[in-house]
Length: 80
Image: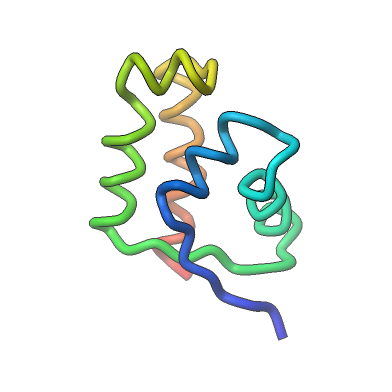
């Protein structure tokens, strides 16, 4: 049975900052459908609030467009 997990904002932040960490491994498992990530609308809005500020974008190296793409992909979690 595939596990369903709620991804804390810290996991999303860590995943975008480095590909070598546990957060990134969790997202890879989700991408490979080895687990089902879950998020509520308030949690999703928190992802957006945390990932978009300039200091976070400097830390993870993503443009606003790339963050928006990540968030668009993440919206699929709301429908599972």
